[in-house]
Length: 399
Image (cartoon, rainbow, N blue to C red; front, top):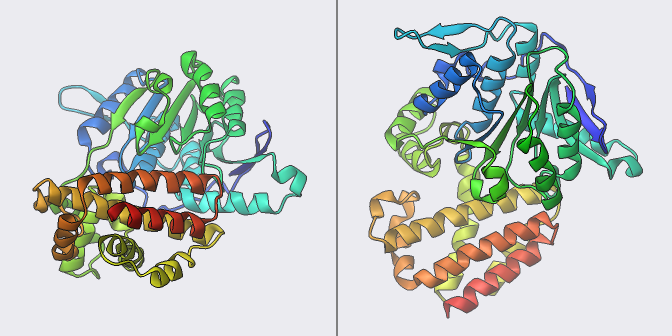
């Protein structure tokens, strides 16, 4: 099911057809999808009536269920049995059987991270001359293509979009439609411009889902050519109940903290690693404390030195930036007089003290600096040096 695409080719290597990856955790029916019931029902109604837009942006926070929903909608489109749920008012809702030939193959892509890791590992086995022009694509079914951000820059690249366009120009071979799932909104400029053509004149047999944490990353011309479906946040109380049911090993105090840190995303809450977050948050707090008080450069640079190159360093840096972003948001919430919305509730006393020391302008500048560090990561800049520069900037602007 893994497809590595040298330039514009799309050779597929399928897994066993009767294998259903993540069968135990993937929702068995649409009723098992958590939250956003109205939005999901509208999409199911559109599929059943044959009126689903050709291009849809599914927007929501990390862990809101964008990929899960996109895959479920793909199943409903491609299912051989085309089951329907009938409302009392006669409205028909599309569903999927989960056991037909098409469903079982598509479900092998349920664990996206695992499939991307396999594809990246397969690329590493290629000759250097082939590796350069090879893009990561996941193809669980001949008529379903999943396009993740291509490492190490983690951007949607031109070769990936060209593979989409090439495939879209052919009729489906084994399913009713061609479905493409682009799992991020971070495009290279050339890739974004190339996508516009197929969005302007999509073939009748094509559906494209673009998953976006921040739709503002997309070109306005892309947004204007797509329907937008936003997945809203679940209430904190509902996530706490979900954690109590699904992760009983977590203490009530930890549940309350995770429910707030998950930002209303059920999937993020269920997979939340509190120990890893605490480690990242401790480093983020070091940056804030150095900015608010007399800086300890020895401790600061000792910390940033641990953020080295490689995939592990990239993940660690991303986790640090996310933790720092949440802390900065909490500082703004405290300055705005809304302490009840603070997410890092176990740090509320310290954050209140920091909010009185650090100005709104400093917090705003620190947030812009985060964007620059993330941009540098995409360009493969040395992470430890980028963090050193960022930490120095925070300290200098706080004086």
